[in-house]
Length: 587
Image (cartoon, rainbow, N blue to C red):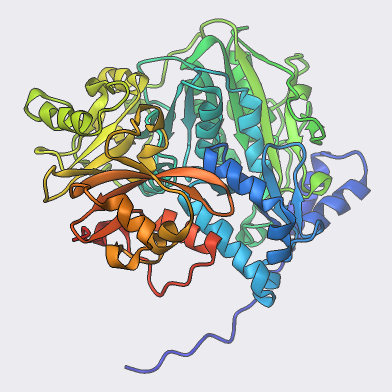
């Protein structure tokens, strides 16, 4: 076999597309040429790294620590390097390019820390403009939320955090692409929330058994607002490429409107600047609604700069020949009319206003039932590029033959209140693990007809093991189960950092290695599963861990994502981080 050589003929993508510039000048998205020049200059600069921190206990603790002088000095984060985005909650921008990260050991270490935090789920790396639609949804306590075209899941995580901060409610996240669905499952798995269900279905035609308070339709588009990160668009952008998507976008928005409650809110968004994918689609659906839908004006973000929607646009073919209204019914639907439906209330985001990508969104209120029904799946042309839906392991809610397992868990830990066993399910029998959903997700599951579309729901709480009492908890689930934990039963709280640091360094620690105080803590403790509570150094936040006390050693069950973040945070030196399923029980 010949030795492979690194390619030396790599050609950097040229950030020029004359058709792109000509098209948007003809659309008159700005009043003067100076604005176009500013926009094009912004598009040619790479996006900054931005991230938002979750509102969990650990997330809040990390943000407090990150804003301390000690942290900024350690990673050389001056005010010019790390900037807080004032108009968004707990959102920060790293004002340097990736090439700058490689030049600085400290900045590179900080980047590793936020990358591991993203995997753990306490923060989310996401472009600023992409964060905006969820704020316009105005999620309130107890809201039911439907997200269409949800993958890869950044907005899903945002919605989950909003539901977590308000309390109650649930999220149904849907995407048509199975591969992207698995990315969505991985992303939301880090949230460890019982009130999320993920579906793989066609957003144009899937029928849901309930209507929702809030619906997000972040539809597929040409993506020309993402030029700063998707460089291939510079080369591939064409004048008429968006026209083929218009019908799909309308169908998705229609189905989203069908499944919104009366008085509910629908947010339609794209990462495109093209009015044929934005205002044109909105106008078409609003016109068809016969007064049951209306565009509303909403400005939740103080200091955020946006522009009004367009009320006039042109339709061109690939040769820039303008189509006339009378030529075809299709183009007639794309053409603006004099009817006042409030298109200026739409929100346009341009890259040169606040150093973001380009984006579009509109807030629609449903005031009456829409005059159409969901499209029949048989009437929609299937995309042959999409794989068939894989058959998943079944979702088996608790049955009498394994109810005893859960009763044993409750008895062993003597929870403060008995968690409803009706919301516990397994993926196989006999169960190798137990998962929990909220009661709202259980009701949705029972009513949803096509169970094949369900990819994931709820979160795992315990796993089977080979030793008596034959189960152990999963660390991430302990955060939402905290109110149930009885500190008097198989739960131990520790003070000081010595034991915690040792348990981060190794899979398990021999009792002989622990300080005398630590050994005394374990004297007389029967071997088996426990819950340990530590105050995490630096972020000064309490966290529960699934643990096992053996005859001569003790260890924590911590998945690789959590352990990696904590090791990076605490500067622990370790050669290899074992994954959760490779771990052995302490002896």
